[in-house]
Length: 587
Image (cartoon, rainbow, N blue to C red):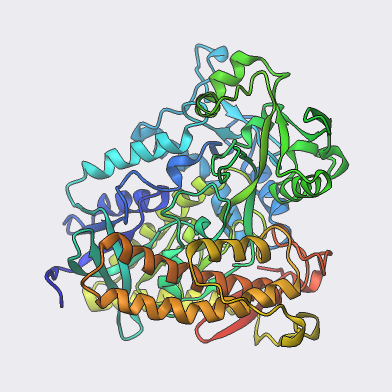
């Protein structure tokens, strides 16, 4: 079946070319064991190397680098945003290691903006975003931070001689050797099959924004890494928590996909109601939260949704017209250019905006070293669930998470390599022990199977009969947006789970045929495989959201609108059972 078989085992196989994957691959390639032999690293991405969610990150990256700030304050802000569901040890690692990771990016050449008003020191310019208590957001090119980080890391990776890059290459499945992940089966753009073996496989393939009709994510965000890990037996966590960015630009007749950075509100922009005559009305956020426009994203997004329902319009206004035009154009050149290209000038007119799917807080459950519950398999970035985000991600912690835990997983593997003096088999044993410890960490509390409650169960007679809608990406996105979106309830979630269960059977069958069918294009084949991954992930998300009978962070149940202490717990999903992990302090 294979027309290519790598005869040499890679030290690392990294899947994904966002900040997490690039940084992990680079760190791995530059790590040398005691014999000084360069490690072999394979980096696989299904598009070109430069295409990822990272590229479109506008707001910046958070780090307590100012003399007036501290990691302790950053930790506290992150914990508050996470609605009592963050894993404190992971948050402490994230915030305490942040300044060092920023130093790494500076040494690689990331051109972070400087505050020229403080010359001659030319200190880093720091912005502020919602739910941050201090100015700690670093940015590059104004609102092009992700682009500059991506370009810098890609340049370093492309010039690294011991990284083999596989672009336009789709991962069909993870290869198992017993219970250990031993590499992956890949399909290239020309249809050829590649089987790569690796001591360590790292999933860093990003999120799953394509689950929703409206999303800020690029088309590559189809949840592949989470689906691959689940099928290989890894545990997933916190899938009910999906963050919707409050401010995506609404253009007539188009799906809202362009992000208007939260940093615009950090500079002083105000959310306003739309009056009957179409003009910008009163500022409404003070009615919802004392932090007003700088409240956490879940609160702002739901407030906007409420205002849209009140007016019957698909948007509210984001008003920055009271701010100096020169400041706006200098600070947000990407937003300015995009708006002007679409006939809008945000320096003189308010922008129509609405929430859009943005970031998955949950993912592949890992320990603080990036290890999953499956030997040989690690994860980092949005694909992973380290516990740092809890129920609601603090703005600009995502790029940071990819850096911190991408670095840490390489550190741990190389520590194990040094410890494994017996060679390859000794290292495999150490990796198995690491996975076992990650599993024990998850099972610190009581592990019990969830029983559906009467509040979550509707007889089929009370559910709407699912119409004979063919499974398409658009149909899936509409179902998820309606039932597993910003506002949820038991009846809608159970209907969604029922529909997605039916669709999953269809999607898996289609995927199986697509893997074997020679007469279709590789673009069509990949779309079928991606859809199967999305349907699987959507079904798991609906299951988790149905079983969390409270509202917390980004998970809002209108039938259970209150946050309950007994639900300060983590939902863990793995084949074949859905289980509830309870720990004494939440995480």
